[in-house]
Amino acid sequence: MSGTASRTASGAKLIENAVVRHETTRGARLLDRAFALAFKGLVYAQIWEDPVADMAALKIGPQSRIITIASGGCNALSYLTADPAAITVVDLNTAHIALNKLKHAAIRHLTDYADLHRFIAEADHPNNLATYHDRLAPHLDEATRRYWEGRDLVGRRRIKAFTKGIYKHGLLGNFIGFAHKVARLYRIDPREILGAGSLEDQRRVFDERFAPIFERKLVRWLTNHPASLFGLGIPPAQYDALAGERRMADVLRARLEKLACHFPVNDNYFAWQAFGRGYGKSKEAPLPPYLQPDNLPMVRERLDRIDLRHANFTHVLAASAAASFDRYILLDAQDWMTDEQLTELWTQITRTARPGARVLFRTAAEPSLLPGRVPDAILEEWEYRIEESQAATLADRSSIYGGVHLYVLKD
Image 1 (cartoon, rainbow, N blue to C red):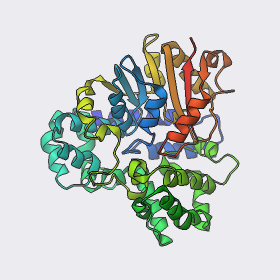
Image 2 (image 1 turned 60 degrees about the horizontal axis):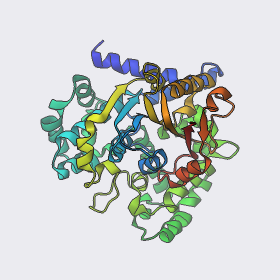
Image 3 (image 1 turned 135 degrees about the vertical axis):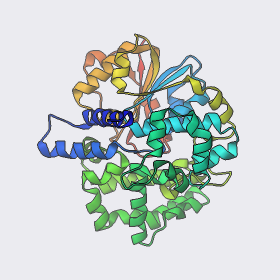
Image 4 (image 1 turned 180 degrees about the vertical axis):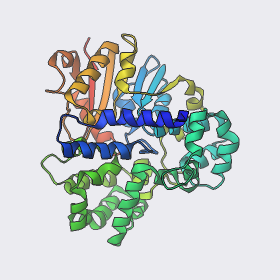
C-alpha cells in the first residue's frame, strides 16, 4: 500500500471510529457507516461556521493559544487576523488536510492578490491548473501532491476542481447543487435573492419564492430521511438532534430563512455560497476575513503560527502538556459523540486549559448538549455564558446551527 493510500485508509478508520455508534441497533450502525464512507472524501471546501462571530465570543488576543478543527481551513486562517500566539489545527479527514495545505501554499506563494483571488476565491479559472503545477506543487509535501494530482471516484484529477469551481465540489457542494436542481424544478433560481437591494427585498423573495418549496411533498419526503442530509455533513446521530419533535423540512426552512433574511447578502459570503455556489467575483463581493485584501499581509506574516495535524482532537489534547491551550473551537463535532467520548474530551480540555480558557462549539439543536452527559464534577469547572452564547448564535451568518455555545473556565 502506498503512503498516500495508507494515510487515506487511516483517515477513514479515524472517521468511522468517531461516527459509528456501536451501542445502537444494527440498522443505525449501517447508516452511521454509510455516512462515514461519504465523509472520508472532501466534505467542505469552505468551513460553515462564522469566524467573525467566533472571534467576538472567544476574545482572541496576542497570548491566545488556540486548538480548532480544520474543516475547510477558512476559520483558522481568519483567526490569524486577531493575532493569536499559536493555532493547532486538527482534522480526521485526509481531504481536508490536503485542502488546508494547498490554501496555505497559495497564501504563502501567490503574492499578487489577483492571482490568489483567482485561485482561492474564484477557484474556477482554467489558468489555475498551471498556477498549481508551476507555483504551488513544488512547495507541497508528497502526500498533498498525490492527493490533488490523483483522481476522484469518477476519474477526474482532483486539482481540476479549481478550474471548474472548487466550492461546487465535495459533499456539501454537491448537496447545494442538488438543492439548486430541486429549486429549478419549481422554476426558482436561487441566485435571485443575491440581487436583492435590502433586507426587505430579501424577505420578500424568500417568502414568495423559497418558503413554499418546503410545503412540497417531494421536499418533505426527501428531508424525512437521515441519508438525505449527509451532504450537509450531518451524521445520523445529529439528524435526530436537529429534527427534535419537528419535521425536518420545517427545521431547514427556519435555518434557510435566517440565512436569507437576517443579514444583508452584500455582507454575507455564506449566502453567496448557498445561493450562488461560490464567492461573488466583483470587488465588492463579501469574503472570509483571511481573503480580504487588507488582512492578507498579516495572515501571510503569521501563517507559521498554524500547526496542522491529521489526528483526533481528543488524542492531540491527551498528548499535550497541562495548561497548553486557552481557546478551543469544536465546531459541531460533539453532536457525533457518545457520552463516553464527550467525557474523555472534556477531561482533556479541562486538564489542558489555561486560566481564562474559552470553549466554543455549535449544536444542531438549540440547547447545549453537555448537561447530563458530561459528569458534573467536570462541568462545575466551567461557566456556561448564556448571554454571550445567545449573542454568538444570533451573529452567526452561516445560520445552519441551532446554537453556538460558550464555556469559560472558572477562576
